[in-house]
Image 1 (spheres, rainbow, N blue to C red):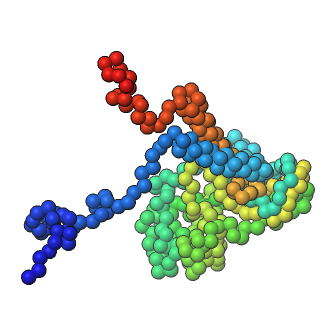
Image 2: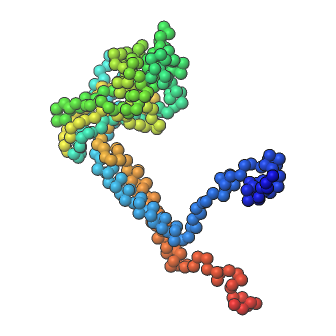
Length: 348
């Protein structure tokens, strides 16, 4: 019978006894934290170089982002207060016999290159409210055999006769239904409403064989009706609306203008002011905006990058002045050790 050398034994077993008897875990460099590791020493030079590198990277990004944002042309026209002809705004919007047509005239300040995005902006509307967000049936929207799954959609789950509403829930029921017709210099232009929804939403979240059924007919002002001959996967206004917003003031894409609009052109917008934001004190606005490589107008990104980059450069310069000019000191100099210092009792 051969003998096992100590080099062939598990390091934990070599300390005495078997692994089974002393309940020691199986030896592993990972569990014993013996894997090779990089432990950089943060010397003043490394700290200065790190701050300087971050500043050099962030400042150009900030300048480019801010410049791109400033080049975007954006028109915002709040119309909810001007498109009501009576002091009783709620009564006006709820009266189905009242003409809701409103005409707005806008002047384009700068040349707007196509495509021009058209958004509707709603304020003080909490789409992120827990009850509102949960009032939908994702399975019903996607699968034909799940049209009766409406238990999460109350109070808009079923009709008074018990028939399922498709699509069900408060989100679909409150679908935005204002409409915009736009003319440039008294010449009507087409608004392209295709491909305004995310492709993944159209293919993965809404079924191509699911059709609206028992949905409201638009009799309640404040919620749009749906075409029952078009499947949900092609009703892009609904798909855009069903992607709920995180903040109380939000914009959703309404359509696109595929032609350029010149500076000082007169835009005439005929609005059907149907959506009821007056009951909860909300606001409505029409937004026309060009885009750039960073998306829509957003100065915050550029300002944030410039702020962080400038702060890092300032800290780098501060460290250089402090450590190399004001109070220079050699890192790890053994002369600073207590036993190497000159003392009255012990000569050097």
